[in-house]
Image (cartoon, rainbow, N blue to C red; front, side, top):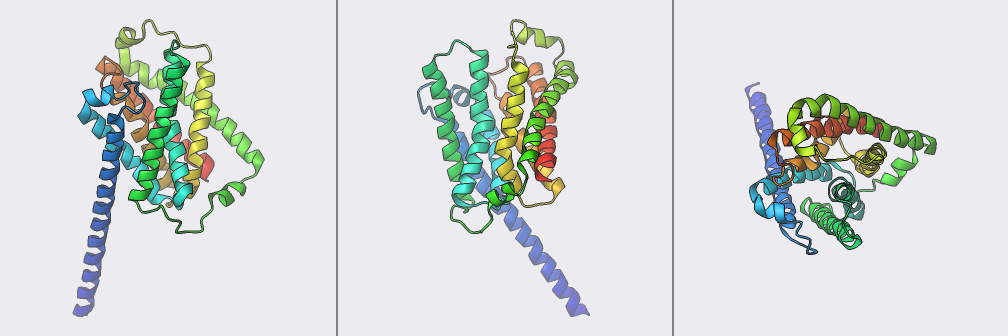
Length: 289
């Protein structure tokens, strides 16, 4: 009896050590990916000076980069995809959520940009996304195909009519979240300080249409990863919500963007709760289940 107890305790101890080792291994790989992502942000690939904020606030930039790397690491490590399929999925997911939509918003709110500058903005994002997706897959040793899992087979299983109504619906849901989170979260938290930042800002008449398309884009680039993730429903819903927060909401915390801290924090809370966490859960429930 005593020998059995000792054996069980040894097995538990071995299991605990194995878990600690896995956590340390994951943390180390994530840190490397975060430093690579930060390094990319410090570089000026196409001469637009897009690295100004990173160079002026390096600590903030590195912390945000490590946060984004954590999201990407969780998705890469939990995905059943490997090789070029995983690289492509991570590229599309990161590119659309971070550099692409950031560039689109820049074009919307700074309408006098030349076509050359606009093209370079998108090119810069493509370069960043290609590097980080390729490096991320290499760091987690998933470059070589190791499974027969086919995301296309999973996607084909869903009838076309179901895809259509779900994709159309998710855009409307995002618009609803956009309106409610602005009214119930951003405005109360920002208070009168909002007038100091946005007093002269004129929103385009088609801003809701843009948000509708944004919601659809977020969902479309999320679906391949979402359908390939290991874990139960709640884990995946939580993972997607947190991933959106780390990749998107944290961007507003970078110094140099919003001058008044109260408005900056209000934006972060609005994005983190509504646009990211709640929307991530909705996308997971709608397209995973």
